Image 1: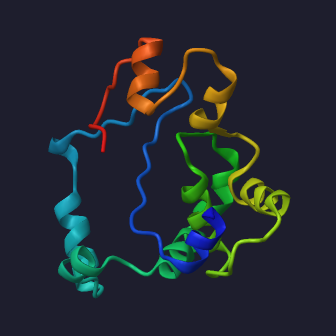
Image 2 (image 1 turned 90 degrees about the horizontal axis):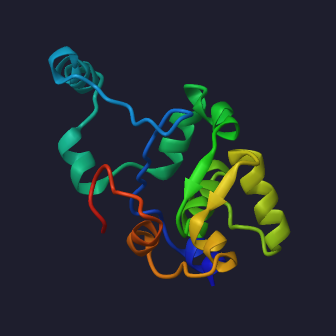
Image 3 (image 1 turned 180 degrees about the vertical axis):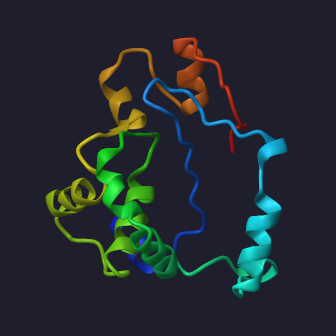
Length: 155
């Protein structure tokens, strides 16, 4: 079912949270931030932020830019801690393969995920199956484990 949905639809949004090797979240100081300068440069290069807000960007263009800046090469070096991420990795794999349909065989799909994202992919929702007393959504699991939410809100 996931394969069919990913093959026939487009990614709507992508959210990533980055942290260091010890779980520390990146922090930036607004006083030293140069967003306005960066945005002005991008506008002069033809980026239409109003249009992007309304229509988004083409996933193929996004994947191409990640590759152009060498970020795709870094992805397998990362550790991916996720929650119910089958669709996320399905859409990302589809992006990186030029919007080709996902493979029929689950082993082949998982091989693609390993190729693009490396061996360190952990899905907490999947791991919960093997842990007594863990069930429900991410907030429920965090509550059960006594983990405080440090950023953002659930959706």
